[in-house]
Image (cartoon, rainbow, N blue to C red; front, top):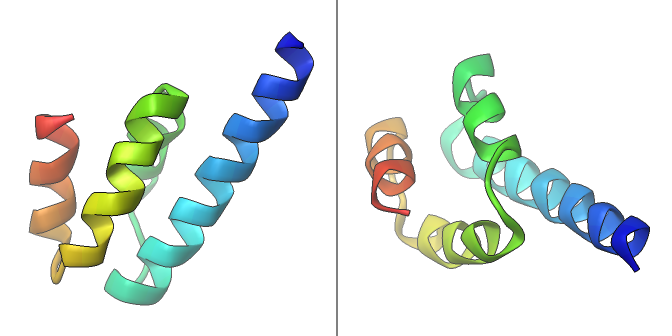
Length: 66
């Protein structure tokens, strides 16, 4: 079960990073690391919030709010 969750989290991180890169351009390694450290629940929250992001500032603020 734990192995399945890790795969799911890795897939969520990958999808969110692809969406963020497409929406905002290249994401810094610092922000990528912060995203990789989020829990699956936090990644789901970020995945919904990123639909409203228009800048890297929105992403940074969003990460602080999670």
